[in-house]
Figure 1 (cartoon, rainbow, N blue to C red):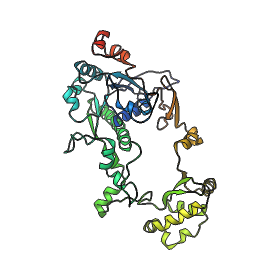
Figure 2 (figure 1 turned 60 degrees about the vertical axis):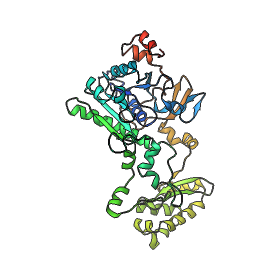
Figure 3 (figure 1 turned 90 degrees about the vertical axis):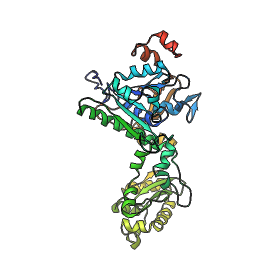
Figure 4 (figure 1 turned 135 degrees about the vertical axis):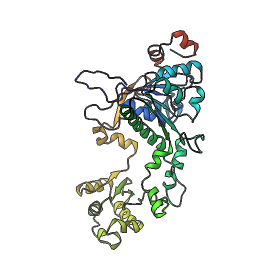
Length: 405
């Protein structure tokens, strides 16, 4: 990690000078490196020479350009290296000489088989931090099993609790396990960098299984089982520790979400819905009673909300300082003035798409906010810059390896 100077009027981004080598593909580990790149880390993304990261072909495309790739590989540089070849092994070794972090998500033993495992890379660069995200981790009886986010969403216990009691479990509609693992991976990399600073400059590797962050975020169901023997079941959008809580349909067909997380909140909801006697009902006097009688309460709330158009309901709740939010689709999010004011969606010029809009950097640092400098790059566009300019290979060596420059 090297210090970078910038004009006094423009302080350096928090991770300026942090070098990240991203050997990973698909979703979880690339999301981790995306969060680091958002705040100034120099991320070199290594991709296969022929196809690149398979994320380029996941989901929707426009004119053959993978759209989600543009999002999660923003702010990174793309180089093409076949890590299974002698040239690729040497290139990775040169990349990590001055790196702070390496991200990878191959099955345990894969990098070792190629000759670029933790033992080799840490010997080259003892300060190196290595993030290793796999389906089931580097240890345990399942360590060698293939693992993707869908499996982690089931294995973590999430899918079992998600959905309605009379229907099969429901998997999420996006990469929930991958995304949470990416968040945790970025956080653990920052922890490891601080640990390096505290412990004489020596790095370490991070062993993270896809299912583990989601399991941790599942709430109290583990301690509830341990202490009470409760196995959390599917309840739709009803909550296990707060009532009322659900999505409700208004008279004009919009859906809204409400949650009575506190007694005062519940009472203000009832005031806004002009059902002031409901909080006085013996079944609904406090949260524990409301949970016991949750289906009766849910019917009362649904009936009251169904009698109002969305705009009228929203104004009533705002006037009563009661909690409510629309159930937005993505079109409504793009049109929402609060999203616009918070700059939650960023517009980025792009040589392939002209321009592209997607989620902005998460969180706003007061002095050194993150930024999206560019969307995910063309495959291998930085080969000359990195392989020749920084790693010292010659043009002949690059061409002999079958790489474009």
